[in-house]
Image (tube, one colour):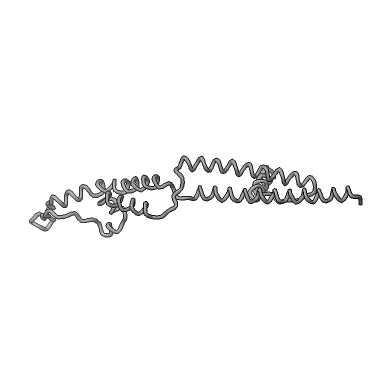
Length: 194
């Protein structure tokens, strides 16, 4: 073996080391981008969006209250007369009284929204603002960030796949990124079915 041969072997080893280091760097970048994307997607909605949604839900819960109980409450507050029964000579007079809700109704959050919407909204607003929650990006900014991350992830996957394929041509075996390997397997299964 000549000095040039030894030098070529060393250069090949150095190149192989750089290839594996580059692959490791791309794999770490892919993991970091994927984690960031997951965090953006899974984050709570933006605080302002949560507040708007809360108010809409309280309004919706209370909206049917008048329809559901209005006539009954008016009847109870005004009093009424029930016609006499078959074997009774007198009509039954029901005096005006405070409305009565169905048993268990006050145990439902909807009841609070119906009876005290402004109070419920104020209290829920206070809870939301003081929750210490890590609110996410507004919907439009979230969608833009996800698109940006998807593009960055796709570019890392492209570079890594190109590196793996090129390394294989010179006898260096590197694993594909898991996401890429799964897509290739799914595509192979799809083609096999056709």
